[in-house]
Length: 446
Ligand SMILES: Nc1nc2c(ncn2[C@@H]2O[C@H](COP(=O)(O)OP(=O)(O)OP(=O)(O)O)[C@@H](O)[C@H]2O)c(=O)[nH]1
Ligand SMILES: [Mg+2]
Image (cartoon, rainbow, N blue to C red; front, side, top):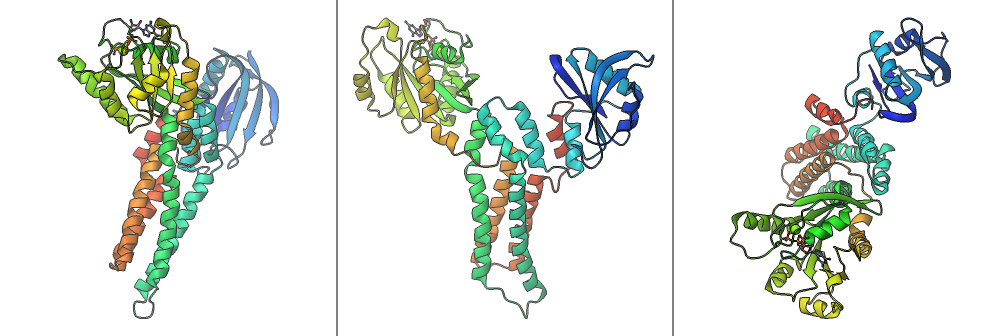
């Protein structure tokens, strides 16, 4: 199989990859100079078409199985970048017997050939797609297979525990293993799993974008604030209260950290059916927020609508943003703080004039620092999280059964289920469907 591994477009170099037992056979046919290749050495050559016409000047590397990315014989051709040359070379390879690789097929083969486990395969995809430095830092450690090693160790621990139980099954009259000893072993494994899980939620939140929800009563300038932070006119702004009806989500990056900004309908008592639904959605969005920006209007007095919103969010993490300061000579921040009885940061901005926006960005990052800092776990996908969580549930069941002296074969059953989840996590056991689902999301050529 063959594919272009570099992105289409103007660039210095493009890379075409070929994998499979016939790789070198096929590539040889389109090279001008016949050379005896040694693996992992770079050779200069020219690619020629069927009439012997030179297509491009290239560098070629041959990798001998199993020492390649896919674990098969592989060739990489580095040609000049651009829109056409690499396409022409790929076409020549296809005409000479290669077939076009599907999305993620190189990595899929690497997985099937035992070159990497699923956590690493997922990291490969994620690092390519990473949009922030923070994401790269978090994902790159899974490329070194440290997470895999950890899961393997957990697997050993569970197996060890199972082995102890099985000795007792096999020799029920001669062997009795101290329950306290078994409990201690089970507790150790459980706490390791819990540790892995503990930061996973924060980490998943950070990798998919920390949710910052903008709320406030109608017309205070929520949509204007969203546009100012997004640096783009994403949401409709009018002087009519009740303009925004649905949630508007916009991804933004501040200091290399991904956030998802959510604009909401102004919250007030309303008889309009559509507006009511919008308000319900706004309230629901608050529940899912990692941080709330509570926007109030500097040009009007705080009223019961503001207080009602404050009541909704007071137990969440929030910042108060006083907007429209351009329309006032003086804004009494302390007074507003007193009326709202809040200790949180109170910021003053003009969303219209884009004043104070940098300070809002700074405080957004500051407010979620703990979420960001507590992400040094290893779980990077929801799939991994679910298997680990299910593993924990099984371990807890086994642990409880052990504590309550339930039959040992029930304990063993739960331990086997926990083991199964670890195997699904790393891909030690898998279904075709799962593998297809994971790799079809990859780009072609990876
Ligand atoms: N003077 C001034 N006007 C502003 C500012 N921000 C927004 N406005 C105006 O306030 C009005 C409402 O702005 P929006 O951003 O639509 O307010 P909203 O909170 O999204 O309103 P709803 O979607 O109806 O809940 C518009 O006429 C804006 O131009 C500001 O900083 N200063
Ligand atoms: Mg709006």
